[in-house]
Structure formats: structure tokens, C-alpha cells
Image (cartoon, rainbow, N blue to C red; front, side, top):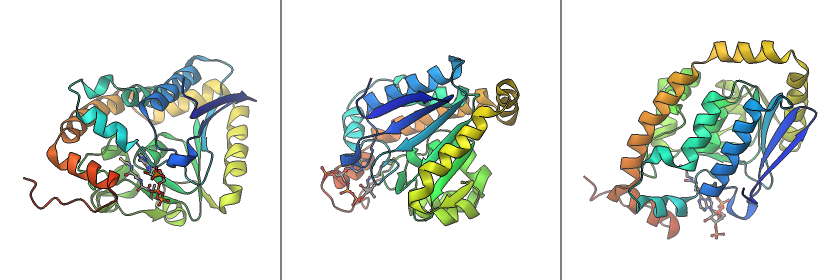
Length: 257
Ligand code: COA
């Protein structure tokens, strides 16, 4: 369990809340384990009809905790054994509807998680980014397939390679989100959608979602991405990027090669 992930079941909606506001909801290994447990529970618990991801504070999530990246970069274990991949497998396997309520920053997995949600509500002024290459890493969560599938190769490549954020209105226009609303309406709008989904015929909605995506192919790709991610995470260029973040400076890749 993690004090930074809150889980609540109400009216068939399992709400999973990022609650580490002082670190912009950056996700630690303990938080991934809690996210994995909640997502695995959602699949098997008949009382759960819908999963709703939302956040406390001014950010949806700043992505993976970078201090964790530094610690894991010094280990030799298989990336796929880490909590993050348990969570990603649970997401790939989840055949019940998932909804996300996104205010503020959604960085890294904060964005790629949305590609596994069936309905996404963003604040008009939310900022979504996937700066994996700024950190000398590689994309995860099957986003190398899902992001270009949703928004096209060139836009996806720019998001990965330049790491610049798109706002909520752009996310809506590009098909990442179903609704873009003022920030103070995000949580209520997402909850209304989750409540509607919770009232639909549960087996029909599960079978429809299962037909719309290939869970096994997604997990296979996630594992391939994990190997690239893992080798990059232990690379000198990634360590330079992580240290630059910790020291609040721009990374210097001029000597990388
Ligand atoms: N990992 C660890 N700590 C993080 C973090 C992360 N991913 N993102 C933010 N934090 C911490 C900051 O270090 C800071 O801690 P401090 O108060 O002890 O110095 C605190 O959260 C607040 O962040 P700050 O950068 O001051 O807020 P901001 O509003 O100026 O910027 C972000 C917000 C999200 C744009 C910025 O924090 C950021 O770029 N974070 C890194 C995102 C990232 O690259 N994630 C990995 C993707 S793979």
C-alpha cells in the first residue's frame, strides 16, 4: 500500500487518486504497486464497473519519480519485474472501462496512462507531455503504438522527441480526450461519465472493450519497450539527464555517443 494512492469504491466506480501533491504526484515504486493492486482488483471484483483515475493538487501526475530512476539505474534487475510493469500489465488486461480526470500537468506515464483510458476528460489548460527523450529514455506503456495510432506519427514523434507539452484543447482536437472543460469542472464531468458507464450492461461493455483492443499484443509491446527503457535508464546519457533534473540545470548530451 502507499499513502499517496487513495482508492475508493462508490456506486460501482473505483476511484484511484494520485495524492502526492508536494511532488506534483510523481509516482514512486510503492505507488505503482498500489496502482497495480487497484487495477488488478478492478478486473476481478464484480462490484467494480468502472475505474476512474483522478488527482489531488494542481497536477494529474509529473510521471515517474526521477529519484527512483536514479536508484533503479544503479541496479541490475529486469525492468519487467518492477512495480511499474505490474501496473502496465494490469492496465493492458483491464477489460472494464477506465476514465481519467486530468487537471494541470500530465507528464510521461501521466500521459501514456490516458491511452489506456476509454474516456478522458482534460482541463482546457491542462499540459500533457511525454519527455522521454529529454530524459534519454524511451516511451513506455505501449505508447509507441498507441500514441501514433491516436494522433498520427509526426505529432507523436514530436511529442516524444521534443518533449513539449500540448494543452487540453489540443488534446481534444487530436483525439486524446473526449472532453476539454474548465479546470474546476474536470472531476465532476469525469465522475458523471463514470456513473453513466457504471449503469451500462456490464458484460456487454467488457466484451466490447476487449474486442476493441488486443491486450496480449499490448503487453508484448510493453515488454519490448521495457528492455529498451531499461538499457537506456542505465546509460550515461540518462544519468546525465537525471542529475540535470536534480540539479535544476539543462542536460549536456554533447559528449554522449
Ligand atoms: N520526480 C521527482 N520529483 C519531482 C518530479 C518527478 N518526476 N516532478 C516534480 N518533482 C518535484 C520537484 O523536484 C519539486 O521538488 P522540491 O520542491 O523538493 O524541489 C516538486 O516536485 C515541485 O516541482 P517543480 O518542478 O518545482 O514544479 P513546477 O510547477 O515548476 O513544474 C513539472 C512541474 C511537472 C513541469 C516539473 O516538476 C517537471 O518537469 N518534472 C519532471 C517531469 C518528468 O520529466 N517526469 C518523468 C517523465 S518520464
